[in-house]
Length: 584
Image 1 (cartoon, rainbow, N blue to C red):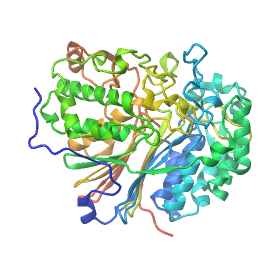
Image 2: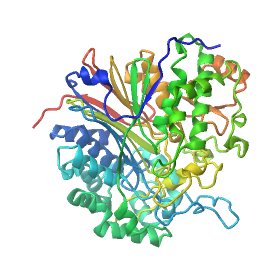
Image 3: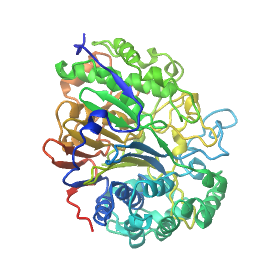
Image 4: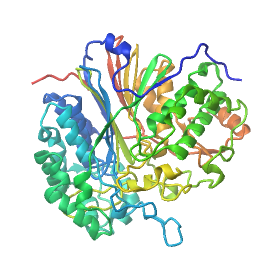
């Protein structure tokens, strides 16, 4: 049996603002600023904007836009994301939802053939797979309502990178090679990302003049520079020429939404994470509620790994069955987030036996799921999985902070660029349920709550997160598709166990279970041979992965020592820098 802490207080909040102890005891700002992102050029863009007098929100705009230029396989103006903000002077915390929306002409059967079967690749490749982008609107919104610099200043580094170019590295070549066949099918995409139909050579300077012009239009006119006028007309014309269903009305009606983050108390830590339509905050709250009563330190490594796997299984099961866009779907959130529900879920976990996912009521009885590996045998050799999204964390010297996770979904999104825009389109429509019980590109299944509907936002796993306690405050997140939430959970548990060096969180071994397929995945070295053998004896079906996954970017402000530290995942090519920033 598990050893429990008593008495136990479990609390889930969905409030804007900092915890009461932080508001009443607000410390001075950190001695230094920090930026951690998945690309050194994006990190430098953020630091440059801070040095120009910007705050963390201005820096977030700069980093987001720079990543759109230098990391086109992960995010971009043609995609979206979630920006979790904390404003130091009043403690306001808010999630800026820049998630893509389904076009108004979309419908539940969009990707089904006449026989009701899912059309292979229809929600992955080409403009019909693209939702209406949210990133440009989010950048304009953050600059207007939270930044202190003009949007033109914050976007200047990205405009320069697009116009002057950046040198192609080995990582870019591997991912563009993975998608080169699809990119080569459209002239504009091939011209922008390939050289003579093939991956550019190392050191090739990749210039994107059309993207620079689109960024310049956004800088000059704000939101209307993208969603109206010449850029919008080119976007719609290009999408429709390729068989897509966008209209000018789709662009004109797109709006970001400010949402209250999900907040959960775990031991001495307050965890603030993404709100729906990201499933991240809800699942983290569910899993932490289940774990709050358990003395994890008293468990052996096999028992601990078993418990965490079963907790993941149950939370992901609820994701598949219940969660969707809160503006469209009524969900039993009060029940899912209640301490009573967590205790009941925990009581169903055997300390000695795995729970077959098919034994849990709901979708498992209908479809067992497939595709344990989102990239299958087509993954480029030597490339860590879960890099086709991006995350960054920013802290400034006032104590403002941003954790943001952005995406275009599959590597290089839909592999389609509306001519004259430089905007690589997302394929986030694959994050909807094309058909209940049928897995998407990441093996995730879902039900009617996440079905396609006009103007609806697809369910996401992106989980930008703050973790705050008496010791200090952490900013973290990662790409990784369906594995994002479990990665953030493992990092937070390490933090709660006393590991306050972000270098530990970003490098630790990872394992993951998502309910369906009923497989426990783990990185090389993440589980010891003894733990692997014990888990197999309990009935777990294990999938050892050949490479690591994720690309976590983290910052920690230790309030006790005053030290600020930052770390970039060693699996990636990112950069984390801490430095003093002089105001002009």
